[in-house]
Length: 246
Image 1 (spheres, rainbow, N blue to C red):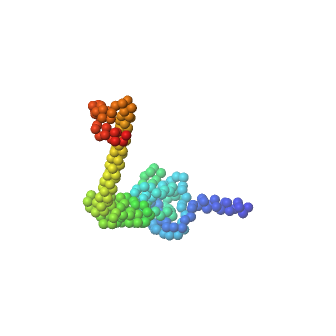
Image 2 (spheres, rainbow, N blue to C red; image 1 turned 60 degrees about the horizontal axis):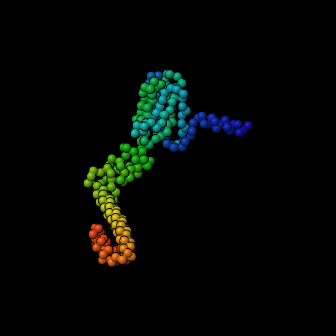
Image 3 (tube, helix red, strand yellow; image 1 turned 90 degrees about the horizontal axis):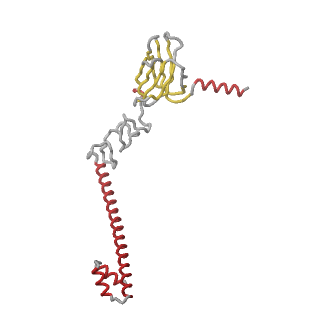
């Protein structure tokens, strides 16, 4: 029996919404039967619970400084006459606007939340932040539409060409590295080409030596064989190399 009561209690708590201990926006909204009027809105700290969503009715939404929706809630009033409702809404450091629309999608109420915004420090460099306004989120050398030309060994991609000395030094280093790499590649290429040339020469000399040995066994002298090879267009240095290595 106790377990059933406990289960029922947990179910009721789940229906009531999740409870949190953090900052939240306390909104008191008046409705005069035709339009909404914000009676009061405050940033508070403490335990709060998300309000339950209605199936239909008005839609409350919060958009951030980049105009993206970050929270929404459906709610309704018990009657269509004058009434007041209180909401505990989650606090977002980058919240910009609270908006309420009716069932047809028409805007019924808006409230500027930018005065409560404090997104600096959330480790996200947003489009409206830069190194000057929030170095915690936009570190040096980050593309944030702000040129930090200070000499600090960090090239800022937002600086015009020539305005950040660090970029020039970085470019010089890159050019030096590329030049050294090209020199190494050329040396390797020449070494490979020279190796192939030597291999080809050894192969040709070996063939000449085979020809000389064959004709010496037939009774020809080396001088006769040498003259014969020269007449057939062989280079003198190749012939001399073949005779020397015999």
